[in-house]
Image (tube, rainbow, N blue to C red; front, side, top):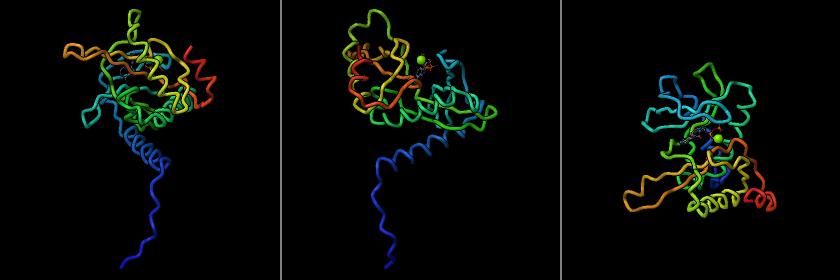
Length: 189
Ligand SMILES: Nc1ncnc2c1ncn2[C@@H]1O[C@H](COP(=O)(O)OP(=O)(O)O)[C@@H](O)[C@H]1O
Ligand SMILES: [Mg+2]
């Protein structure tokens, strides 16, 4: 009988690496004709709407090669990987992250395009949900670093069917890995 080398079980670190490779392949496969328009504007410039060959819609952030924005997007991708358990619930799913071949190179980060609007005055009912998201993010050792109304997305689509508003937190370009309880408490204040 064939006696192969014993395979050690996959660790969370292996899984994160495999996921990072898959996300980089998706970024490398981006082509200019997948961009459908501009979704919004943030601190890093335009955020584009793109459609992947599988049909999924992506909110796409792009950075020129070697720019400070590229470092911020790399940081944001790493944080989304740390927050993988919260994807599609508290934060959007990361769909692609890595160096580009199109657009004369650079770096791309794409999250699942979520319908909704920014948090507004009058959304006081969403405060407990927003704090619960923040607690889940902190529990994974992440400080968001840029908590603002525009970085929360409120989805009211479920109300018509008797459901409630839902809320997500995104834009982790200013985030850091910091399990310090004091730093986390400062962010809640
Ligand atoms: N996954 C997403 N789904 C829907 N809209 C998004 C998504 N990501 C970004 N946007 C839109 O683009 C804007 C800027 O995105 P953001 O990640 O905050 O970029 P920046 O780092 O430039 O501030 C957001 O305020 C929002 O309107
Ligand atoms: Mg933002």
